[in-house]
Length: 562
Image (tube, rainbow, N blue to C red; front, side, top):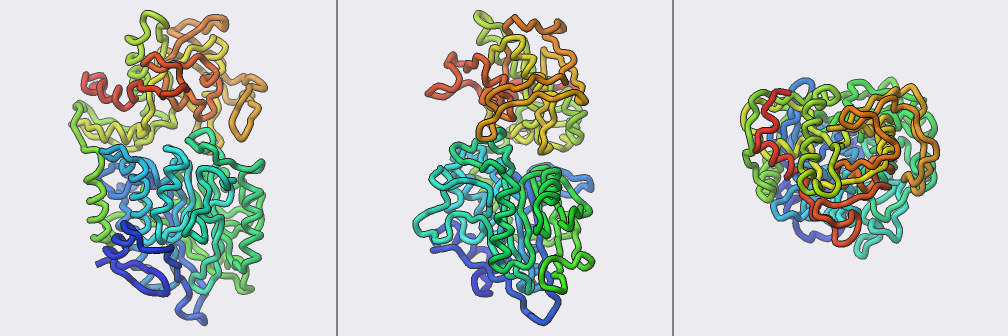
Protein backbone atom coordinates (compact mmCIF):
# COMPACT_ATOMS: atom_id res chain seq x y z
CA UNK A 1 0.00 0.00 0.00
CA UNK A 2 1.29 3.50 -0.83
CA UNK A 3 1.90 5.98 1.98
CA UNK A 4 1.67 9.74 2.27
CA UNK A 5 3.57 12.06 4.59
CA UNK A 6 1.17 14.18 6.66
CA UNK A 7 1.32 16.37 9.74
CA UNK A 8 3.94 15.98 12.49
CA UNK A 9 5.79 13.21 10.70
CA UNK A 10 2.80 10.83 10.65
CA UNK A 11 2.20 8.55 7.68
CA UNK A 12 -1.23 7.56 6.45
CA UNK A 13 -2.07 5.00 3.78
CA UNK A 14 -2.90 6.50 0.40
CA UNK A 15 -6.46 5.26 0.59
CA UNK A 16 -6.96 7.16 3.84
CA UNK A 17 -5.54 10.37 2.36
CA UNK A 18 -7.78 10.02 -0.69
CA UNK A 19 -10.79 9.42 1.55
CA UNK A 20 -9.88 12.56 3.48
CA UNK A 21 -9.52 14.49 0.22
CA UNK A 22 -13.00 13.42 -0.81
CA UNK A 23 -14.59 14.24 2.56
CA UNK A 24 -14.56 17.14 5.02
CA UNK A 25 -11.48 16.33 7.11
CA UNK A 26 -11.00 19.71 8.74
CA UNK A 27 -8.27 22.23 8.05
CA UNK A 28 -5.15 22.11 5.92
CA UNK A 29 -2.49 19.55 6.89
CA UNK A 30 0.86 21.04 7.92
CA UNK A 31 3.90 19.86 5.96
CA UNK A 32 6.73 18.42 8.05
CA UNK A 33 9.98 18.39 6.10
CA UNK A 34 12.49 18.93 8.90
CA UNK A 35 15.84 17.22 8.72
CA UNK A 36 16.34 13.92 10.52
CA UNK A 37 20.00 14.72 11.28
CA UNK A 38 20.72 18.41 11.92
CA UNK A 39 24.45 17.67 11.92
CA UNK A 40 24.41 16.05 8.49
CA UNK A 41 24.76 17.68 5.06
CA UNK A 42 22.17 20.37 4.53
CA UNK A 43 20.49 19.28 1.33
CA UNK A 44 16.94 19.48 0.04
CA UNK A 45 15.73 17.50 -2.97
CA UNK A 46 13.06 19.24 -5.04
CA UNK A 47 11.11 16.86 -7.27
CA UNK A 48 9.42 18.88 -10.00
CA UNK A 49 6.80 18.52 -12.71
CA UNK A 50 4.99 21.10 -14.82
CA UNK A 51 2.28 21.44 -17.47
CA UNK A 52 0.69 18.07 -16.77
CA UNK A 53 -2.60 19.19 -18.36
CA UNK A 54 -4.25 16.45 -16.27
CA UNK A 55 -2.57 13.65 -18.25
CA UNK A 56 -2.58 11.50 -15.14
CA UNK A 57 -2.39 7.96 -16.44
CA UNK A 58 0.22 7.63 -19.14
CA UNK A 59 -0.66 5.38 -22.09
CA UNK A 60 -4.37 6.25 -22.00
CA UNK A 61 -3.37 9.75 -23.15
CA UNK A 62 -0.76 9.20 -25.91
CA UNK A 63 2.09 11.65 -25.40
CA UNK A 64 5.37 9.90 -26.27
CA UNK A 65 8.47 11.88 -25.47
CA UNK A 66 11.73 11.86 -27.37
CA UNK A 67 12.82 8.66 -25.65
CA UNK A 68 9.45 6.95 -25.80
CA UNK A 69 8.48 7.55 -22.17
CA UNK A 70 4.85 7.69 -21.12
CA UNK A 71 4.45 9.39 -17.77
CA UNK A 72 1.93 8.99 -14.98
CA UNK A 73 1.36 10.82 -11.72
CA UNK A 74 1.20 7.50 -9.84
CA UNK A 75 4.85 6.85 -10.73
CA UNK A 76 5.79 10.37 -9.64
CA UNK A 77 4.01 9.76 -6.32
CA UNK A 78 5.83 6.47 -5.75
CA UNK A 79 9.14 8.09 -6.69
CA UNK A 80 8.63 10.72 -4.00
CA UNK A 81 7.98 8.04 -1.39
CA UNK A 82 11.12 6.18 -2.45
CA UNK A 83 13.18 9.36 -2.12
CA UNK A 84 11.62 10.14 1.27
CA UNK A 85 12.66 6.71 2.52
CA UNK A 86 16.23 7.61 1.56
CA UNK A 87 16.08 11.19 2.83
CA UNK A 88 13.40 11.57 5.52
CA UNK A 89 12.36 15.18 5.80
CA UNK A 90 14.53 16.19 2.87
CA UNK A 91 12.20 16.02 -0.15
CA UNK A 92 9.55 18.37 -1.56
CA UNK A 93 7.33 17.66 -4.58
CA UNK A 94 6.51 20.79 -6.62
CA UNK A 95 4.37 21.67 -9.66
CA UNK A 96 4.85 24.49 -12.18
CA UNK A 97 1.20 24.96 -13.21
CA UNK A 98 -1.28 24.08 -15.98
CA UNK A 99 -3.05 21.19 -14.30
CA UNK A 100 -6.70 22.02 -14.97
CA UNK A 101 -6.84 21.26 -18.69
CA UNK A 102 -7.12 18.21 -20.90
CA UNK A 103 -8.83 14.84 -20.77
CA UNK A 104 -9.76 14.79 -17.08
CA UNK A 105 -11.63 18.10 -17.40
CA UNK A 106 -14.21 16.50 -19.73
CA UNK A 107 -16.76 14.86 -17.47
CA UNK A 108 -19.80 13.19 -18.98
CA UNK A 109 -22.04 15.45 -16.88
CA UNK A 110 -20.18 18.59 -18.05
CA UNK A 111 -19.35 19.68 -14.48
CA UNK A 112 -16.06 21.52 -14.98
CA UNK A 113 -15.86 22.67 -11.35
CA UNK A 114 -16.10 19.11 -10.07
CA UNK A 115 -13.53 17.97 -12.63
CA UNK A 116 -11.11 20.66 -11.45
CA UNK A 117 -11.66 19.80 -7.80
CA UNK A 118 -10.98 16.10 -8.40
CA UNK A 119 -7.89 16.85 -10.51
CA UNK A 120 -6.26 18.88 -7.75
CA UNK A 121 -7.29 16.26 -5.18
CA UNK A 122 -5.29 13.74 -7.20
CA UNK A 123 -2.29 16.01 -6.63
CA UNK A 124 -3.18 16.01 -2.92
CA UNK A 125 -3.23 12.21 -2.84
CA UNK A 126 0.03 12.02 -4.81
CA UNK A 127 1.86 13.91 -2.07
CA UNK A 128 2.48 17.20 -3.86
CA UNK A 129 3.56 19.91 -1.45
CA UNK A 130 3.47 23.23 -3.35
CA UNK A 131 2.68 24.50 -6.82
CA UNK A 132 1.72 27.61 -8.72
CA UNK A 133 -1.12 28.50 -11.06
CA UNK A 134 -0.91 28.19 -14.84
CA UNK A 135 -2.95 30.02 -17.46
CA UNK A 136 -5.05 26.92 -18.17
CA UNK A 137 -6.29 26.92 -14.60
CA UNK A 138 -8.46 29.85 -15.77
CA UNK A 139 -9.90 28.26 -18.92
CA UNK A 140 -13.32 28.06 -17.25
CA UNK A 141 -12.93 31.29 -15.27
CA UNK A 142 -11.66 32.19 -11.79
CA UNK A 143 -14.70 30.91 -9.90
CA UNK A 144 -13.88 27.34 -10.98
CA UNK A 145 -10.34 27.85 -9.67
CA UNK A 146 -11.64 29.12 -6.35
CA UNK A 147 -14.09 26.24 -5.93
CA UNK A 148 -11.36 23.71 -6.75
CA UNK A 149 -8.99 25.28 -4.20
CA UNK A 150 -11.55 24.56 -1.48
CA UNK A 151 -11.05 20.84 -2.08
CA UNK A 152 -7.35 20.87 -1.19
CA UNK A 153 -6.13 19.51 2.15
CA UNK A 154 -2.37 19.29 1.72
CA UNK A 155 -1.24 20.67 -1.63
CA UNK A 156 -0.71 24.44 -1.36
CA UNK A 157 -0.90 26.88 -4.27
CA UNK A 158 1.40 29.92 -4.25
CA UNK A 159 1.13 32.95 -6.52
CA UNK A 160 2.65 36.32 -5.65
CA UNK A 161 1.70 38.45 -8.65
CA UNK A 162 -2.10 38.49 -8.65
CA UNK A 163 -4.16 41.37 -7.25
CA UNK A 164 -7.14 39.26 -6.25
CA UNK A 165 -8.56 40.75 -3.04
CA UNK A 166 -12.22 41.54 -3.62
CA UNK A 167 -12.31 39.58 -6.90
CA UNK A 168 -13.66 36.18 -7.90
CA UNK A 169 -10.36 34.68 -6.73
CA UNK A 170 -10.18 36.43 -3.35
CA UNK A 171 -8.00 34.12 -1.21
CA UNK A 172 -9.87 34.99 1.98
CA UNK A 173 -12.34 32.32 3.06
CA UNK A 174 -14.01 31.55 6.41
CA UNK A 175 -12.39 28.52 8.00
CA UNK A 176 -9.15 29.01 6.06
CA UNK A 177 -6.92 31.11 8.36
CA UNK A 178 -4.06 31.02 5.86
CA UNK A 179 -6.31 31.67 2.87
CA UNK A 180 -7.25 29.40 -0.03
CA UNK A 181 -3.80 30.03 -1.47
CA UNK A 182 -0.74 32.05 -0.55
CA UNK A 183 1.93 34.28 -2.05
CA UNK A 184 4.92 32.56 -0.49
CA UNK A 185 5.99 30.12 2.22
CA UNK A 186 9.11 29.17 4.18
CA UNK A 187 9.46 25.39 4.45
CA UNK A 188 12.15 23.47 6.40
CA UNK A 189 13.61 20.77 4.14
CA UNK A 190 16.76 18.77 4.81
CA UNK A 191 17.95 21.29 7.37
CA UNK A 192 17.49 24.23 4.96
CA UNK A 193 14.84 26.90 5.37
CA UNK A 194 13.56 27.00 1.78
CA UNK A 195 11.53 30.02 0.69
CA UNK A 196 9.02 29.37 -2.10
CA UNK A 197 6.90 31.81 -4.11
CA UNK A 198 4.81 31.54 -7.27
CA UNK A 199 4.44 33.62 -10.44
CA UNK A 200 1.78 33.36 -13.17
CA UNK A 201 2.33 34.55 -16.73
CA UNK A 202 0.61 37.91 -17.37
CA UNK A 203 -0.33 36.59 -20.82
CA UNK A 204 -3.14 34.81 -18.97
CA UNK A 205 -5.03 38.07 -19.52
CA UNK A 206 -5.25 37.37 -23.26
CA UNK A 207 -4.97 33.57 -23.54
CA UNK A 208 -7.43 32.50 -20.84
CA UNK A 209 -10.53 33.65 -18.93
CA UNK A 210 -9.12 35.53 -15.95
CA UNK A 211 -12.28 37.56 -15.32
CA UNK A 212 -11.94 40.34 -12.75
CA UNK A 213 -8.55 39.15 -11.41
CA UNK A 214 -5.76 41.65 -12.06
CA UNK A 215 -1.98 41.95 -12.31
CA UNK A 216 -0.04 45.02 -11.19
CA UNK A 217 1.69 47.58 -13.41
CA UNK A 218 4.90 45.52 -13.30
CA UNK A 219 3.24 42.11 -13.32
CA UNK A 220 6.28 39.90 -12.65
CA UNK A 221 9.51 41.52 -11.48
CA UNK A 222 8.16 43.86 -8.79
CA UNK A 223 6.13 41.08 -7.11
CA UNK A 224 9.19 38.82 -7.32
CA UNK A 225 11.35 41.41 -5.54
CA UNK A 226 8.70 41.78 -2.84
CA UNK A 227 8.53 38.00 -2.41
CA UNK A 228 12.31 37.64 -2.11
CA UNK A 229 12.46 40.42 0.49
CA UNK A 230 9.61 38.92 2.52
CA UNK A 231 11.08 35.42 2.44
CA UNK A 232 14.55 36.59 3.47
CA UNK A 233 12.97 38.56 6.32
CA UNK A 234 11.22 35.36 7.44
CA UNK A 235 14.52 33.51 7.58
CA UNK A 236 14.66 31.77 4.20
CA UNK A 237 18.20 30.58 3.43
CA UNK A 238 17.43 29.51 -0.14
CA UNK A 239 14.73 31.14 -2.31
CA UNK A 240 13.02 29.18 -5.09
CA UNK A 241 10.53 30.67 -7.57
CA UNK A 242 7.78 28.41 -8.90
CA UNK A 243 7.04 30.09 -12.20
CA UNK A 244 4.58 29.63 -15.02
CA UNK A 245 6.27 32.10 -17.35
CA UNK A 246 8.27 30.15 -19.93
CA UNK A 247 12.04 29.76 -20.14
CA UNK A 248 12.79 33.08 -21.84
CA UNK A 249 10.86 35.03 -19.21
CA UNK A 250 12.57 32.98 -16.50
CA UNK A 251 15.91 34.11 -17.90
CA UNK A 252 14.76 37.74 -17.87
CA UNK A 253 13.59 37.30 -14.27
CA UNK A 254 16.96 35.92 -13.19
CA UNK A 255 18.77 38.79 -14.87
CA UNK A 256 16.62 41.53 -13.33
CA UNK A 257 15.73 40.26 -9.84
CA UNK A 258 18.51 39.39 -7.42
CA UNK A 259 18.17 36.94 -4.55
CA UNK A 260 16.43 34.08 -6.39
CA UNK A 261 18.57 30.97 -6.01
CA UNK A 262 16.57 28.68 -8.30
CA UNK A 263 13.59 28.75 -10.65
CA UNK A 264 11.33 25.74 -11.10
CA UNK A 265 9.57 26.71 -14.31
CA UNK A 266 6.67 25.86 -16.57
CA UNK A 267 4.48 27.16 -19.43
CA UNK A 268 6.85 26.63 -22.36
CA UNK A 269 6.85 22.81 -21.95
CA UNK A 270 10.65 22.84 -22.18
CA UNK A 271 12.63 19.74 -21.25
CA UNK A 272 15.94 21.01 -19.83
CA UNK A 273 18.47 18.18 -19.46
CA UNK A 274 20.88 20.77 -18.06
CA UNK A 275 20.03 23.68 -15.80
CA UNK A 276 20.77 27.13 -17.16
CA UNK A 277 22.55 29.29 -14.59
CA UNK A 278 21.97 33.03 -15.05
CA UNK A 279 23.50 35.49 -12.58
CA UNK A 280 23.78 32.64 -10.09
CA UNK A 281 20.13 31.53 -10.48
CA UNK A 282 19.51 27.90 -11.47
CA UNK A 283 16.76 27.80 -14.14
CA UNK A 284 15.04 24.44 -14.62
CA UNK A 285 11.98 22.95 -16.34
CA UNK A 286 10.93 19.32 -16.78
CA UNK A 287 9.03 19.16 -20.09
CA UNK A 288 5.33 18.38 -19.64
CA UNK A 289 2.65 15.75 -19.06
CA UNK A 290 4.64 13.69 -16.53
CA UNK A 291 7.09 12.54 -19.20
CA UNK A 292 9.86 13.51 -16.77
CA UNK A 293 10.27 14.35 -13.12
CA UNK A 294 12.92 16.93 -12.38
CA UNK A 295 15.36 16.43 -9.51
CA UNK A 296 16.86 19.69 -8.25
CA UNK A 297 19.17 18.74 -5.37
CA UNK A 298 19.84 21.91 -3.39
CA UNK A 299 22.98 22.19 -1.26
CA UNK A 300 23.24 25.05 1.22
CA UNK A 301 26.32 27.25 0.96
CA UNK A 302 28.80 27.12 3.84
CA UNK A 303 27.82 30.59 5.03
CA UNK A 304 24.20 29.52 5.54
CA UNK A 305 22.72 31.64 2.72
CA UNK A 306 22.26 30.66 -0.92
CA UNK A 307 23.45 27.61 -2.80
CA UNK A 308 26.72 25.76 -2.93
CA UNK A 309 26.83 25.71 -6.74
CA UNK A 310 29.44 22.95 -6.89
CA UNK A 311 27.33 20.62 -4.76
CA UNK A 312 23.91 21.52 -6.22
CA UNK A 313 22.68 19.40 -9.15
CA UNK A 314 19.81 19.03 -11.62
CA UNK A 315 18.62 16.08 -13.68
CA UNK A 316 15.49 14.99 -15.52
CA UNK A 317 14.39 11.42 -14.85
CA UNK A 318 12.06 9.74 -17.39
CA UNK A 319 8.79 8.67 -15.80
CA UNK A 320 8.59 5.17 -17.27
CA UNK A 321 8.36 1.57 -16.08
CA UNK A 322 11.78 1.83 -14.46
CA UNK A 323 10.05 3.80 -11.70
CA UNK A 324 7.67 2.10 -9.26
CA UNK A 325 4.01 3.02 -9.24
CA UNK A 326 1.41 3.70 -6.56
CA UNK A 327 -1.35 1.15 -7.15
CA UNK A 328 -3.78 2.84 -4.75
CA UNK A 329 -3.47 6.11 -6.64
CA UNK A 330 -3.83 4.29 -9.96
CA UNK A 331 -7.09 2.77 -8.72
CA UNK A 332 -8.36 6.16 -7.60
CA UNK A 333 -7.53 7.73 -10.98
CA UNK A 334 -9.27 4.85 -12.75
CA UNK A 335 -12.38 5.57 -10.67
CA UNK A 336 -12.29 9.27 -11.58
CA UNK A 337 -11.92 8.27 -15.24
CA UNK A 338 -15.26 6.42 -15.14
CA UNK A 339 -17.02 9.80 -14.91
CA UNK A 340 -15.37 11.17 -18.07
CA UNK A 341 -16.80 11.35 -21.59
CA UNK A 342 -16.49 7.80 -23.01
CA UNK A 343 -14.21 7.03 -25.94
CA UNK A 344 -16.03 6.45 -29.25
CA UNK A 345 -14.68 5.55 -32.71
CA UNK A 346 -15.66 8.28 -35.19
CA UNK A 347 -13.62 7.35 -38.29
CA UNK A 348 -10.56 5.62 -39.70
CA UNK A 349 -6.98 6.69 -40.45
CA UNK A 350 -5.67 5.13 -43.65
CA UNK A 351 -2.17 6.42 -42.82
CA UNK A 352 -0.56 7.49 -39.52
CA UNK A 353 -1.05 11.06 -38.39
CA UNK A 354 2.39 12.30 -37.36
CA UNK A 355 2.02 15.38 -35.16
CA UNK A 356 5.42 15.21 -33.47
CA UNK A 357 6.71 18.28 -35.35
CA UNK A 358 3.90 20.84 -35.01
CA UNK A 359 5.27 23.58 -37.22
CA UNK A 360 5.84 21.25 -40.14
CA UNK A 361 3.33 18.48 -39.66
CA UNK A 362 0.36 20.58 -38.56
CA UNK A 363 0.40 22.49 -41.85
CA UNK A 364 -1.75 20.22 -43.99
CA UNK A 365 -3.73 18.77 -41.10
CA UNK A 366 -4.51 22.10 -39.47
CA UNK A 367 -5.34 23.77 -42.78
CA UNK A 368 -7.94 21.06 -43.28
CA UNK A 369 -9.31 21.92 -39.83
CA UNK A 370 -9.56 25.58 -40.82
CA UNK A 371 -11.51 24.41 -43.85
CA UNK A 372 -13.85 22.53 -41.48
CA UNK A 373 -14.53 25.79 -39.61
CA UNK A 374 -15.26 27.70 -42.80
CA UNK A 375 -17.33 24.95 -44.40
CA UNK A 376 -19.49 24.52 -41.31
CA UNK A 377 -20.27 28.24 -41.36
CA UNK A 378 -20.93 28.53 -45.10
CA UNK A 379 -24.41 26.93 -45.27
CA UNK A 380 -25.58 29.16 -42.43
CA UNK A 381 -24.55 32.36 -44.19
CA UNK A 382 -24.73 31.81 -47.94
CA UNK A 383 -27.67 34.16 -48.36
CA UNK A 384 -26.25 37.01 -46.27
CA UNK A 385 -22.46 37.08 -45.88
CA UNK A 386 -20.49 34.53 -47.91
CA UNK A 387 -17.56 33.15 -45.91
CA UNK A 388 -14.29 33.60 -47.79
CA UNK A 389 -12.03 31.64 -45.45
CA UNK A 390 -11.34 30.01 -42.11
CA UNK A 391 -8.86 31.10 -39.47
CA UNK A 392 -7.50 29.28 -36.39
CA UNK A 393 -4.62 29.99 -34.02
CA UNK A 394 -1.71 27.55 -33.81
CA UNK A 395 -1.77 27.68 -30.00
CA UNK A 396 -4.98 25.65 -30.03
CA UNK A 397 -3.24 22.55 -31.39
CA UNK A 398 -1.75 20.55 -28.54
CA UNK A 399 -1.05 16.91 -29.44
CA UNK A 400 2.57 16.09 -30.27
CA UNK A 401 2.31 12.40 -31.03
CA UNK A 402 1.99 9.82 -33.81
CA UNK A 403 -1.50 8.39 -34.22
CA UNK A 404 -1.21 5.04 -36.04
CA UNK A 405 -3.36 3.94 -38.96
CA UNK A 406 -6.66 2.61 -37.72
CA UNK A 407 -9.62 3.92 -35.76
CA UNK A 408 -9.97 7.63 -34.99
CA UNK A 409 -11.69 8.32 -31.68
CA UNK A 410 -13.31 11.38 -30.20
CA UNK A 411 -10.48 11.43 -27.63
CA UNK A 412 -7.86 11.59 -30.38
CA UNK A 413 -9.54 14.72 -31.72
CA UNK A 414 -9.90 16.21 -28.26
CA UNK A 415 -6.18 15.71 -27.61
CA UNK A 416 -5.34 17.54 -30.85
CA UNK A 417 -7.57 20.54 -30.03
CA UNK A 418 -8.71 20.24 -26.39
CA UNK A 419 -10.71 23.45 -26.06
CA UNK A 420 -14.49 23.88 -26.02
CA UNK A 421 -14.52 26.68 -28.59
CA UNK A 422 -17.62 27.55 -30.61
CA UNK A 423 -17.76 28.59 -34.26
CA UNK A 424 -18.44 32.24 -35.05
CA UNK A 425 -18.16 34.49 -38.10
CA UNK A 426 -16.51 37.89 -38.21
CA UNK A 427 -16.86 40.53 -40.92
CA UNK A 428 -13.79 42.74 -41.28
CA UNK A 429 -12.75 45.53 -43.58
CA UNK A 430 -9.84 44.65 -45.82
CA UNK A 431 -7.62 46.73 -43.54
CA UNK A 432 -8.96 44.90 -40.49
CA UNK A 433 -8.18 41.57 -42.14
CA UNK A 434 -4.66 42.76 -42.93
CA UNK A 435 -4.25 43.89 -39.31
CA UNK A 436 -5.34 40.42 -38.20
CA UNK A 437 -2.82 38.68 -40.43
CA UNK A 438 -0.14 41.17 -39.38
CA UNK A 439 -0.72 40.18 -35.75
CA UNK A 440 -0.23 36.57 -36.79
CA UNK A 441 3.25 37.42 -38.05
CA UNK A 442 4.50 38.06 -34.50
CA UNK A 443 5.58 35.07 -32.39
CA UNK A 444 4.39 35.23 -28.78
CA UNK A 445 6.97 36.34 -26.25
CA UNK A 446 6.17 33.41 -23.96
CA UNK A 447 6.77 30.72 -26.57
CA UNK A 448 3.10 29.95 -27.27
CA UNK A 449 3.01 32.08 -30.39
CA UNK A 450 0.26 33.96 -32.17
CA UNK A 451 0.57 32.13 -35.49
CA UNK A 452 -2.40 31.41 -37.72
CA UNK A 453 -3.73 28.39 -39.55
CA UNK A 454 -5.60 29.47 -42.68
CA UNK A 455 -7.96 28.15 -45.31
CA UNK A 456 -8.95 30.38 -48.24
CA UNK A 457 -6.52 33.05 -47.04
CA UNK A 458 -2.83 33.39 -47.85
CA UNK A 459 -0.11 35.33 -46.06
CA UNK A 460 3.65 35.78 -46.07
CA UNK A 461 5.67 37.33 -43.23
CA UNK A 462 9.09 38.91 -42.88
CA UNK A 463 9.77 38.84 -39.13
CA UNK A 464 12.86 41.01 -39.50
CA UNK A 465 10.59 44.02 -40.02
CA UNK A 466 8.84 46.07 -37.28
CA UNK A 467 5.97 44.37 -35.45
CA UNK A 468 2.53 45.83 -34.80
CA UNK A 469 2.28 47.75 -31.51
CA UNK A 470 -0.73 48.39 -29.29
CA UNK A 471 -1.91 50.59 -26.47
CA UNK A 472 -2.85 48.33 -23.57
CA UNK A 473 -5.18 48.58 -20.59
CA UNK A 474 -4.76 45.98 -17.82
CA UNK A 475 -2.37 44.14 -20.11
CA UNK A 476 -4.89 43.78 -22.93
CA UNK A 477 -4.59 45.57 -26.30
CA UNK A 478 -7.28 48.19 -26.86
CA UNK A 479 -5.91 50.20 -29.80
CA UNK A 480 -3.36 49.78 -32.59
CA UNK A 481 -0.71 52.46 -32.05
CA UNK A 482 1.44 51.61 -35.04
CA UNK A 483 0.67 49.12 -37.77
CA UNK A 484 3.32 46.49 -38.34
CA UNK A 485 5.34 45.92 -41.49
CA UNK A 486 5.91 42.17 -41.24
CA UNK A 487 3.00 41.18 -43.49
CA UNK A 488 4.59 41.38 -46.94
CA UNK A 489 1.87 39.54 -48.90
CA UNK A 490 -1.80 38.83 -48.16
CA UNK A 491 -4.60 37.54 -50.36
CA UNK A 492 -8.06 35.98 -50.33
CA UNK A 493 -8.66 33.20 -52.81
CA UNK A 494 -5.46 34.20 -54.57
CA UNK A 495 -6.51 37.84 -54.99
CA UNK A 496 -4.84 40.72 -53.08
CA UNK A 497 -6.85 42.02 -50.15
CA UNK A 498 -8.76 45.20 -50.99
CA UNK A 499 -8.53 47.52 -47.93
CA UNK A 500 -11.93 49.07 -48.75
CA UNK A 501 -13.82 45.79 -49.20
CA UNK A 502 -15.53 43.80 -46.42
CA UNK A 503 -14.64 40.14 -45.88
CA UNK A 504 -16.41 37.53 -43.74
CA UNK A 505 -14.28 34.80 -42.17
CA UNK A 506 -15.12 31.88 -39.90
CA UNK A 507 -13.16 31.46 -36.69
CA UNK A 508 -13.54 30.45 -33.03
CA UNK A 509 -15.07 32.38 -30.15
CA UNK A 510 -11.68 32.46 -28.40
CA UNK A 511 -10.24 34.66 -31.14
CA UNK A 512 -13.46 36.64 -31.50
CA UNK A 513 -13.02 37.69 -27.85
CA UNK A 514 -9.54 38.98 -28.66
CA UNK A 515 -7.73 35.90 -27.37
CA UNK A 516 -3.95 35.78 -27.94
CA UNK A 517 -4.09 39.54 -28.46
CA UNK A 518 -6.18 39.45 -31.67
CA UNK A 519 -7.72 42.89 -31.17
CA UNK A 520 -8.49 43.31 -34.93
CA UNK A 521 -10.86 40.32 -34.81
CA UNK A 522 -12.50 41.59 -31.62
CA UNK A 523 -13.17 44.93 -33.36
CA UNK A 524 -14.94 43.24 -36.28
CA UNK A 525 -18.66 42.59 -36.76
CA UNK A 526 -19.02 39.30 -34.86
CA UNK A 527 -21.97 36.93 -35.12
CA UNK A 528 -22.87 33.47 -33.88
CA UNK A 529 -23.95 30.83 -36.37
CA UNK A 530 -27.36 30.82 -34.68
CA UNK A 531 -27.85 34.45 -35.74
CA UNK A 532 -27.17 36.10 -32.39
CA UNK A 533 -24.79 39.03 -32.08
CA UNK A 534 -21.62 37.66 -30.50
CA UNK A 535 -21.04 38.79 -26.92
CA UNK A 536 -24.68 39.45 -26.02
CA UNK A 537 -26.76 37.40 -23.59
CA UNK A 538 -27.74 34.64 -23.94
CA UNK A 539 -24.40 33.31 -25.22
CA UNK A 540 -23.91 31.60 -28.57
CA UNK A 541 -25.36 28.17 -29.15
CA UNK A 542 -23.23 27.75 -32.27
CA UNK A 543 -21.69 24.30 -32.81
CA UNK A 544 -18.50 23.45 -30.96
CA UNK A 545 -15.41 23.17 -33.13
CA UNK A 546 -14.92 19.65 -31.72
CA UNK A 547 -18.40 18.71 -33.00
CA UNK A 548 -17.66 20.10 -36.46
CA UNK A 549 -14.31 18.32 -36.51
CA UNK A 550 -15.83 15.01 -35.48
CA UNK A 551 -18.46 15.35 -38.20
CA UNK A 552 -15.78 16.00 -40.80
CA UNK A 553 -13.87 12.89 -39.74
CA UNK A 554 -17.04 10.81 -39.97
CA UNK A 555 -17.50 12.11 -43.53
CA UNK A 556 -13.96 11.07 -44.49
CA UNK A 557 -12.43 14.54 -44.88
CA UNK A 558 -9.18 13.41 -43.25
CA UNK A 559 -8.58 10.13 -45.06
CA UNK A 560 -5.50 11.40 -46.91
CA UNK A 561 -2.06 10.90 -45.31
CA UNK A 562 -0.55 13.89 -43.56
